Image (cartoon, rainbow, N blue to C red; front, side, top):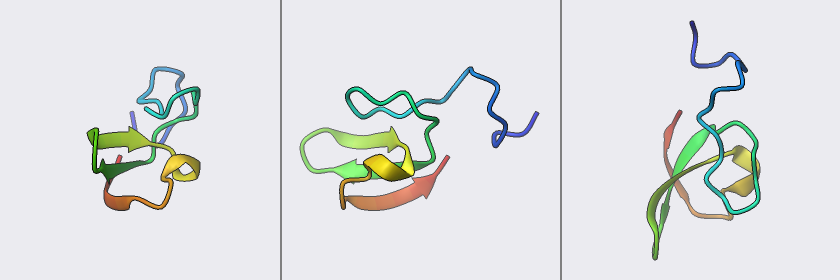
Length: 50
């Protein structure tokens, strides 16, 4: 099964209050690396794709 399919099992966005599928990994200065969706990058540096 491809990681791109929406099978309802995640990974999900790690931003508070967001349940969208995760798409990228950002580097947050206080919380380290976080897996989030494209809408929740918050201007932080994207260091990888999920």
